[in-house]
Every structure is written in C-alpha cells, then in structure tokens.
Image 1: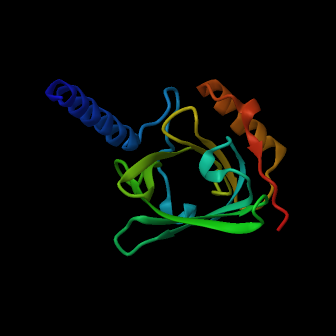
Image 2: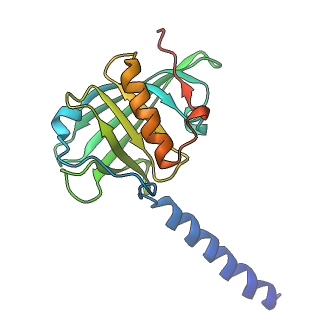
Length: 180
C-alpha cells in the first residue's frame, strides 16, 4: 500500500501541475506576430464572428458575437453570445481579458473560468478596425471577426493567406451563419 501511495501521489501532483501549467498557455503560434501600435479604444465594441474552428465551447453555435468593453480597472470585459441551433437557445459567456505585456501590443490573455487563461492575439487588423484576424495560443484556435455580419472577399483572402502562411489549416474553418 505504501508503494502505491509513493506512485499515485507524485503522478497525481504531476498531472495536476501539468493541467495548471497548460491552463496558463497564453503564447502565440510560431510565425505569428501580434499587431503593434494597437488601439484598445478602437477595438472595443461589438464584433461578429465570421469564421472559427470547431471548438467544443462553441459547438453548434451560429449568430456568434463578441462584445468588448473596458472595466474601471483597465481590464476588458468579454461577452460572447451565440445561438445554439440544436438546443434552440441563446448562450452567453462572460470573461475578462488582460494585456500580456502592454496595451500597445495586441497580445492578451482571456479567462472565462479563472484561473484558466488562454491566449488571444490580434495578428491582423485593417486600419479602420472593422476586420480582425485573431489567433489563440496554438494553431488550434483562430477567429475571423468583422464589425458587420459579412466580410469583403479581399479581406477574407488576406486573412486566409496570412493564416495559411503561419500554418493554420484554413480548409477546416467553420463559416458562421448570421440570420437572427
């Protein structure tokens, strides 16, 4: 029995440590760079999700929007909302985003379930802050966002080409419907 405890306790602690360490993964994919001279005020407001990969936390959602607003302490409130077309209900998640380094670099970390943070990196944005390409911490996470439910073909191609150069499998993107 003592031998079993000598194995189970270290393995359990190691597994817990790995889970905690991986939950703080706020990196940026190799080959990607966050936007510099980022203007937080211009980024705030509503964004429509145009495309994403099939994440379990967004499973069966369409009409997805993200609303960003500044909290009094300088952090950013993130409100994600989408319509679950299988359950036929609206779903909402509220989280918090913080800058990883400084507010001039579009590298943030976001948490919907603290203390678990994930990377949120704006890697491309047009000069008017109408369209954004957002990378997570790895090549498993990518979003194309727009201020309107549609996106011009030229911007779509620009973002897809950039994502492909970084290593994203853009053929696996889900193109989100906006019909409600």
